[in-house]
Length: 254
Image (tube, rainbow, N blue to C red; front, top):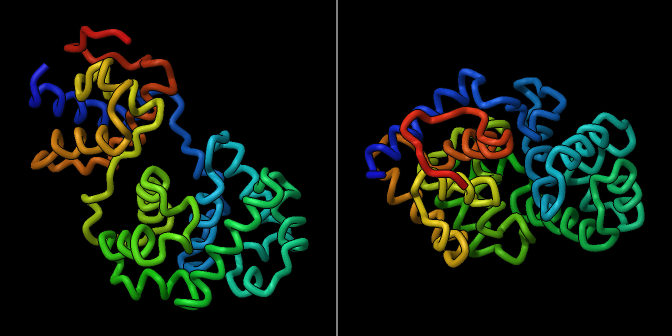
């Protein structure tokens, strides 16, 4: 299959996703309080801190736990940077494990507090953090994956950083500049779709690193008007729902 055919299939999948033709398309992050426009800081904290705990676990359960924690009057303070910065580890652990938002009793607590303190001590708030970066994805990347990499445990990893950037722009409502540079995050579902669409071969799926798969997508979509990260939801649901949506010109099978 040539490049034009693959890109056309991507456009078809994007349309199918928007029209609800891919099957169940409720995102894990849809488990949220439904923030008002003026709840900027709470919204940014909500869509950032749980992300750093999203490693090898059910994303739906993670965000359900985040929502339950946020709705709990006492536990909700874990989403306040100033409260977390001043909180002792035992109290933070109690709040984070109450609804199983944190699963690792030590590491998850440390990650949550480290990121909270990093933002609070350097910028004062999430809102100020994004303002200082000019809402520029490339500047944010330089901070999180460069200058302050050790201060953003797990969130600074390539897979979660790029997906977090997508979430913070989509759900966090941050109008990111240079959004087109956000890389697609090749998890199991994205990799399956990459093979099926002809972006990579089955052999490459076994040998290429995640960053190399992301680069394949970037080169493919360059000049197409499609941002790589915008393909993540349709591909993810296409695979997760068992490829019930059929592409007419696709003859490959997994």
